[in-house]
Structure formats: C-alpha cells, structure tokens
Amino acid sequence: MNETHAHTADNGSSTTQHSTSRPGSLPLRRPAQGRMLAGVAAGIARSLAVDPAVVRVGFLVLALVGGAGLPLYLAGWLLIPDEVTGESLAGEVIRSLSGQNS
Image (cartoon, rainbow, N blue to C red; front, side):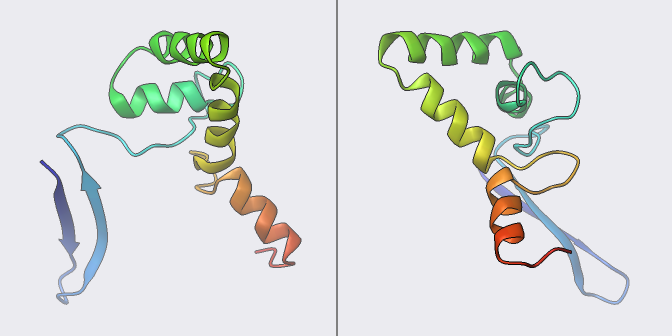
C-alpha cells in the first residue's frame, strides 16, 4: 500500500509531498547519530524500523558469502543522502566538479 500525501497552503498551492510505504516509515537518509562508519546500515535500519545490528550483519554475511556486501555498502554511501545536508556524496562530488558550489 503506497500513499502519497500533499500538504496544501491556505492559497491552495501544494507545499510538500512525500510518499510512504507504511505508516511511520522514515525516508532513507544516512543519520548523523548512531553511525559506525558512514551511516548506511543505520539509515537503512531506521527506514525499515529494524535494529541496525541486523543490517550490519546482513552486510557482513553478503561480504563473506558472495562478496557483494562491500560494493553494496559503498553504493549506499555514495547514493543515500546525508541527513544533515540532504545530499548524497555522489551529488556533492558532481556538484563540486561542475563548479556549481551553492
């Protein structure tokens, strides 16, 4: 069940929209608190409402069994936005390389 919510200002214009897959779910962000390395596992765990240790063990198992854990973690680090800046590491790098420092 996927719901889209729109908040409307007094003038009738839509101000914000967000989509949730279930009530109480949080957007996927790398949190500033609770990180062990880059916050990928903590962000995924918070978004899924599970213990971060479960996600960390999942990455470890994937790394040991098939070798996919490390590339997946690195992809998460590059692509999942930071909670503080709201921008992913890849987005920051692209923006700085294109000379659009805001």
